[in-house]
Length: 219
Image (cartoon, rainbow, N blue to C red; front, side):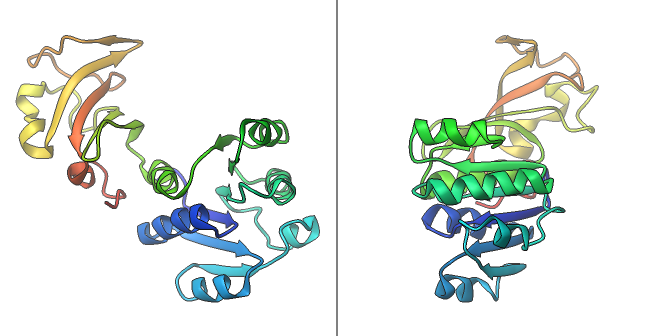
């Protein structure tokens, strides 16, 4: 898992989608919102659920987020709250801050004040973001269709030194290796050549088979 502890600021559709997926994964999740009813709903399933004014920097600092690995600032329609949560998170030492923006201008502002990653999503993108935060093996993840995705990942340690023919990845994992990337993309894949640790594999896979490659992925 890339990150183990998360703070989710704002529990609209996007924030709830991210929070729910991270909670399902077993991560340590703090959720913060100014709506007492939403906080009450999350109090039984999140690690901590706190009602706070996210426009107040003192209230945000009081949350004690200095040991949080990743903060997700999910208030895409509230620039003031997003700015405060992003700035305080970075000042507190949060390793990675992901901020939702409703438009390019807002995204530019959030980047300038310290957001490490700016996204422009809604509920479905929230699920993809959570998957990206959780998945430790995947360098890249692209949806090709409703059922099929293209992933980029380095070979597992036990694959290194073995050929694709020996590994039989299609049968074991349901993947089809379409290219190998080592600085440049090698479109021809020789099934008899042993894999190298630093050569990334580009693979097509049905989404239902993703947990076979990374146990943290939840479909």
